[in-house]
Image (cartoon, rainbow, N blue to C red):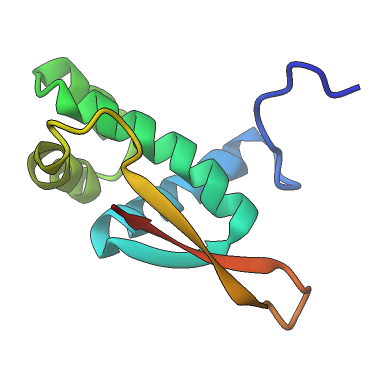
Length: 116
């Protein structure tokens, strides 16, 4: 039974999974929009929205948390450029848009994830 299981494993152990989503979050923050599978996009949305909420507090502790979870360049961009844009917004910073096509290799559903 899968009761109270909040995390998806994506066929990876803990450290490779964290590295995968750290890279995806970095690419999303630097580019503003990325194309990935729908399941990864939904999971990435949870992670990045929590980081934006932390960055909105605008204090040193939240900046240090961002630096521990993201590469330096994307942490600074999130803290100084992206979070002030959403100062008045109470959530829902990201949008997942499903694409009508599937990946040829394995048939996975694709989608865009982007900032609102």
